[in-house]
Every structure is written in C-alpha cells, then in structure tokens.
Length: 324
Image 1: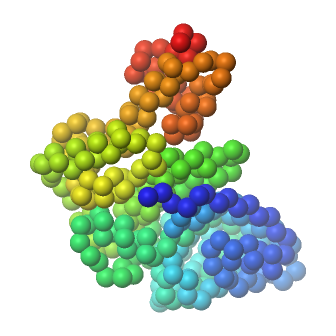
Image 2 (image 1 turned 60 degrees about the vertical axis):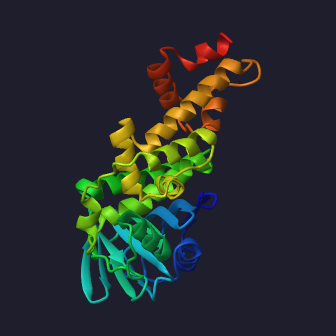
Image 3 (image 1 turned 90 degrees about the vertical axis):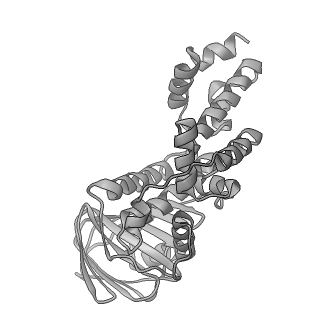
C-alpha cells in the first residue's frame, strides 16, 4: 500500500560530468553544455525519491543547453523558481518562467536552454503511476500514456495547489530529520502529488475529474471506517482506502462527506488522534514524550499535533501525559 521508503538526495557539482551523473541517478540521462564555454559552473540539486515519484529543486549559475532522449518511462515537469528556460518537445516550443512550466512525455526528445542563474523545480512521475491514478479517479480504463498538454499553469487553482505540494516535499526533504521518513506521512503526500498532477495539467479527461460524484450507499464508507479503526497505523492513502472500500477515491470522498460530514483522511487523523490520546493517558512520563507519541501516530509536527489535541480534548497533550 505504501510507496517505497523515502530516499533523499543532495548534490553540489562544479563540473558538467558530475552534474550529468547527479541528474541521471534519480531523474534521467542528459547531455549538458555551457552556453559560454569560459563561464564558471555551479550546480545544486536537492530532493527526494518516493515510490513512483521524484521531486527536486535545482539551481545553476550559468546558462546551459540540456538535451535528453526519451524520458525512460516517465512524465517530467519542469518549472522555474527564478530565471527562465526555453524548451522544445514533440513539436512544441515552451517558454518556462516562474509560474509557468512544461510537461514532457515519456516518448520524444527534449531540448532545453536555460538563462544564467536558473532555479527550477523538477518532478518525475512514472507513467504507470499516472495511468493508474487517472483510471482510479475516473473509474474506467484509459489508453496507455495519456496525452497531456505541454504547458502547466501554476499561478492559480489546481496548479497553484500542486505547486504548494511540490514545494512542501522539497522543503521537507531538506529538513533533518525529515517527517517524510515516516510512511504514515509520506504515503498520502506521494499520492497527493501524483493525483494533483492530473488535476493541474490539461488533458481530455480534466472536466470529468472536476465533475462532482454522488454516493448514496453507506457501504463503502463503512468498509473504510472498519479498516481504519482496525489498524490506523497503516500508511493509508485515499486511493488505498478506496480500494479497500470497493469504490473510487471520488466516490468514497463523497460518501464520507454525505454520511459523516468529513473526508477519509480527516477521519483517519481523528482516529490516530484518539489512539495518541489513549497512549498518553496510559504512558509513564518518565518513559516517553509527547513528541514520540505524536510521531508514532503519524503527526510530523508536534506543534500542530498539540493544537489539534487541545481543540479535541480541551487540554495540552503534555498535561494528559503528566496526570497519568
């Protein structure tokens, strides 16, 4: 159910061969040439590989020409944090500036020319994961390698929300220790980025994804609730719960809204909060801490856990632990 364990990467290279090796390790094989052969070169690249997903943020100080052959069974998105880039892919010319990005397909070479001082976010998603996520959300098969529009707008709506998720992963990947090492936190974020990509980019099924669903039967909701309560420590994702419930993620989400006035993941967090509360009540304060209990139940940020705990139980989690 959970994606593979998180693998973090961080590179700083001052020669092109080292940079090509760094990109090839977690993304794809490239060629790189300086626009000014006499310029200095400094390349930084930091991020995370998480299951079918790789996300990173990079910076180069001197303009480059970058080329790839086919993208090795993945979709690739590149968009600027600063500076600009011109790209060519599948007969499309693409201008990449902050807020506007490019989507590259698994088949077809890519040629990119960057400005000096170019910073960018890079997202690689396995094409099988894209297909499976699209079929799961739609509830019917789609052709392999769905054709996605080459431009992606990250300034508003679904694109802006997806950009926040990508930046969140990059920020967390740079934090030590990272909450992304915890499967309960990493698994839903992995799925949120893959599914958010399908809502942020254009394709023939986009309007169908945005169309509301209606779920009148409580049976899928009951199945999901039973699974959550039986083992809330599992690294559940919306798609994983939907599979257990025998419904699509959209149908299950609508069912939770209709019958429980919440969402599947919000309900999961509530159950985990209940288990954390029970553990705090039963624990010896000499043998554990609030932070340890919070992390054990998938709450990566202790301050946010404490806020949620106080809203629910009317007191600080530390008070519960101390008054065992």
